[in-house]
Each structure stands twice: as structure tokens, then as C-alpha cells.
Image (cartoon, rainbow, N blue to C red; front, side, top):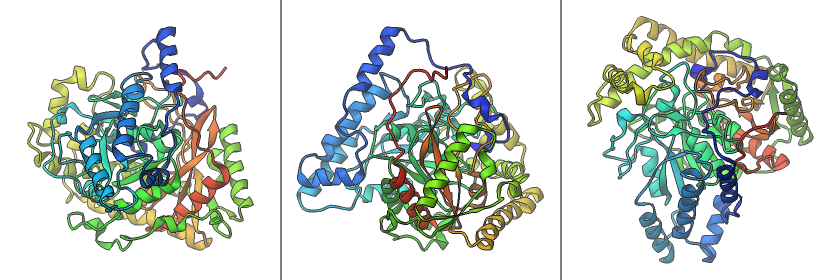
Length: 538
């Protein structure tokens, strides 16, 4: 998300104002009908993986029953009702998979904590089944993978039910500098479930919305810079962007080899931690995972309510000073952490990254061109490289580009290969500089983590001018460095969810998860959405 939006700074105060809305004009009867349907009590509302497993074990629920309930809810409020449009495709094999897992359980075989649990996947992650992998693009509408992505194979072996694919910002938000997050030519516009005229942000928009709206137990998103943590923050859920190398990227449509990662999205830190433990692993096809020794970490063992006690946490208070409600929320979070025994240390981190984000963006173009050319060449469609993808979009502009164009694609196509002098000179420098800044900050002040507001509250959906996300975003340092970042619900501003971030050094996920869990248990800010049509700031 940040990679093209946060280069366009705008006033944070402006995000509260209404802008041109994508939403169709609904009659009072239609709005009332939508409210009535979503107001019905949903048996699985806010249920956790642990609670589902207890119900499976007691025989009160089966995986088939749970899968049917989620499918019914998707039908009622995602494909109808509020029309959240977070789920692109339902897996036609989902109930068959669930039935086979129920049979295994009945025979005494339980594969682990995900056995029988329905999971949704962002639609840039390949599945070797009947579902296409589209990246939200009509150019890949019939793109069917021959094999599962490495992480999908791990999920299946862990007993997860692959429920379907989620909508995303088309091409993971790397097509246009003026795009609207959550929109794709395949799936249309995903809506924020708290207020339907608000942006879900992205690019893992559908995964975040589906989790928040209780359409699944957990989901998998992907991030290059902000695409997990930003939508998680504004949709009131937990998102983890892991260290680059903790999770394989094989079988995931690429943007940046240096920064891409998949990651878990859940309603609780525990659920996200369970999913992270399943996804992590070494993959011979992804060289970044070769140094990963964190394959069998039990992240649940770090989930302690007192984990913040004695932890030294660096905060940059100036990040939220331009917006009084957001600043007050951050100060409240700091006080909560101090009450829990954390030691708060002031830091000055973000200024040190001035200029690096622009260079980061240019390096991504080189890596995107290289990665997407290799990916498209491996598919069976007529679009076999970036040049032909640009041509396809131009030929189908009325459907693919009705609101915004493909400036990033066109700019990336002009770049050279990965042996270009600019790329060789800058890419290594940017990575090392980002890692050096974070490590020096952590070590010089003896910090266990860095913390800040993830992102301000959601802006309006605006298909004319694109996203207006303000100048508060805490994800760039970790993204450029390839370091881990977790966001957890922190409260609300203008009645919209806001997340709190914990970031650290490479492979420090365990400690960050512990701190996020302690904050979550202390505050319990997560509240399910009510699908209100419009945010009234009056």
C-alpha cells in the first residue's frame, strides 16, 4: 500500500472528510434489508481457532458444519447484503475437504491446531485446484496453477480447509500511483465492514475484511510495504508481516524479491501466532528461507499477559502530533504499556528514512519487472511478460482501467534488468542502510521493540483521486529492512479502528508477538464491525 500512496503525502485531518464515494446509492429499503441480515446472530462470531478445536473435540461442531456456516455467511453479507466483495472465489472442494478431515478426526487422527479450520487466501497465492490465481486482474482470470504454493501445501498438510480466494488491490497495488485500495478488475471494490463508504486499504484488503467480518477463522495476506499491516489496522484485526525469509514466497505472484512476504491475519494475536507457526518453513525454491532456523518455533509459548513487564520499547511521539484524537490514542496506548511494566524510551527513527522510500520505490520497479516477467512466462495464458500485460490492459481499458491507469507498469517496463548499475548500486545500499538504522536504534537504547500507530483511520473510498491516507505510517522501516512487524487493535478514532505496531530485528517475531498479546489482553480493543452504510462525522 505505502509503496505508491505514502509517496503522496496529505494532511491527516483530510482523511476524516467525505470524498467521492464508489458506493451505489441505496434506497432506505435496501439499506434496512442489509442491516437486518447482518444483525442476525452468527454462531461463529469472533470464535477463535482454540474454541473451534474444543467444539470439534466435544462433537458439538464438525468441520463440515463450520465450513457450511462460513459459506452461508459469505453468501449473505459478502456476495449480498452489504456486498463487502472481500471473497473472489469459493473453493468448490471446500466441503469435500472438510468431510475428509472430519473422517480423519473420527478415526483418531488430528493433524494439529488447524485441523478442519477454514482459511481464506489472498488471490495472488497459487492453489493447484479448480480456483484460478488472478492477482485481481482480468489478464489472469483463467490462470490456473499446476501446483500449490509452498505455504498452501503446508496449510493442507496441517489440515486447513482452503475456503476460497480473497479480493485484493489489483496487482497488489503496484499498477498505478492513483489507484484505490481494495479495487480489482476481477472483484470490484472491497468495502470496509465498519463503515461501507470507507477504504479497506490494501493490498490484502479482502483478507483483512473477511477476517474482520467473521467470514473465516483466519486468512493469509501478502506484503511488500504495508499490504498486511495497513488493512489489518483499519479493519480492526491482527496482522503479522514476518521477517523476509521466515515464510516461502514460492508460488506467490511477486513484486519485490527483497521485501515480499506472506503473513497471517486473524482476530486475535493467538490465532495469528498459530497460523504463523504453520506457514513458517524452509523452502529450497526460495533462497531467502535458507537462513531461517525458526521453522519449529512455538509462538504460542510467548503468549503471556505479563510479557510487557520490563520490556524497553522505543516510541516516536511526534508521528501523531498533527492529529489530536490520534495523538491522544497513542498516548493512552503508551500509558497502558507503562502500567503493564514496560519502559518507554523516546526515539527518532523515521527522519533517518527520509529519501530511502523513494529509492525503495525505484528498486521495486526493477524487481517487479524481473519477477513478473518470470512469473508470466511460467503461465499458460497469452500474457507472457510485462510488455504484453500493458498491451492487454490498454486493449481492455474500459474494464481494466475505468478509474486509474498503469503508470507504475509503464515505468517499470522502462527499467533495465537486475544487472543494471542503478539497481546494483542502490538495492544493496538501501537494504543495508535500513537494517543499520533499525539495529543501531535498538542496540544504542537497549530496546526490545519499536512501537507506533500503524496508520491513521481509514479514508473514504475515492475512485477519482485515489487513496488519501495521511502522513502517519509506521511500516516503511521494517518493510525496507525486511524485518518483522505486527499490528494489534489499539482503539478507535472517528469511530474507525486504528492499530498499534510492534517492530524489531530480524526473526524477533516471538518477542513481538508476546508484547502484542500482552497489549491485546490489557486493552481488548477488538470489536466486530456492524456494517454501517456511512460514517457521519456531524
